Image: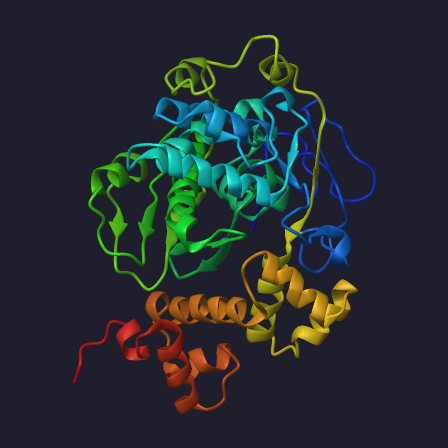
Length: 403
C-alpha cells in the first residue's frame, strides 16, 4: 500500500505496534495482537468475534451520536435504549458493546425518528467526533491513500467507528473500489446502515484531511425519492441500478497530502455532542486515556476472507477446513453464523457475486479470464453461475450491446 505517516511509523503505519508488547505513544491509542497471513491479526477463534453477544465494539461515542441525532428527530429518550442493554449512566469512554446491542440501538433509532436523512446525519455525527475517539491518531497519516487504508481496511478502527461494516477493496486500472459488507444487519436495516457508513466515510475523509475528497458511489437500488439527501451528504457522483454498492476513488487522488486540521474547520462542523455534560465522558475524551484496540474480525468477515481466498488462490477451503482452523465443530460454525443471520452458502454467493461484478462490470475482462480468476473451468458453468449470482449475463455486466 505504500502507507506512510508524518511521525515515526511501524507495521501499523502510525507508530502503533501490532506485534509483541503494547506501544503507548502518548496518543491515547495502543494496539494488541499478532499478524498472520491475513494481515489482520487473526489467529483462529481467539481473535475472531464469534458471537453477536461478544462485546467487541468500543462504543461510547457511537451511542452518544445515535442518541443525539435520534432525539433531535423526535425519538423518545425513554424508549431509545429500551431492549438494548445499554444504560445512559454507564456511557464512559471505555464502554464496550456487542453487535447485538448496537444493532438493537440502530433499530430503535430507525423506528422512532422522522426524516429520510437520519442515517446520513448519524454518519456525520460519528465522523464529527473523530478527534475524541481513537481515530484521532489518523491525523498522522501522510496522504489520502494512508487515511483511506486505515479507515476502511484496518480492523482496529472498524470497531470504534463502523463496527457493522467492513469494506472489501478491489482495484481497476485507475480506480479503487470499496464494496461494503455488513455484519449482523437485517434486510430492514441494511439500507439505513449503508447510508450511515457512506456518510461517515465522506465526513471522516473531509474532517481528517481538511478538504473535500472526490468520491463516487454506486447503488443496486433505483434512484431514491430523497435524492437531495444523497447529494447533500455524499455528493453528486451517484449511480443507481448498479450491479453492486460501492465507494469509488480515483487513484490519482490517493497521493494528495493531508493538510493540518485547523480549529476553524473543526468549529464549522455540527456539534452533535453539545448535550454531553462537561463532567462526564466529554472530560474523559479530552484527557484521551489509553484506549486498547485489538486486531479482530467478525466471524462472517473471517469466513468471507477465506471464501475469497478459495476463489483467487484455488485453495480447498470449505466448512470442515474453516471449522478446524477456528478450533470448533462444523455444527458450531453453522450455529455461530446463523446468529449473525448468514450461512456459509450465503456468504459464498455474496463474495462470488462481488468478485464477478468487479471482473466483468468494472475491469471488463473476457469470460475466459473471469472464469479462471473465479476458479471455474467450464465456460457454460461460468455463464450460468454469473447469471444466478447477479441476475445478468457476463456480456450484460460488461455493458456490451446486444447483437
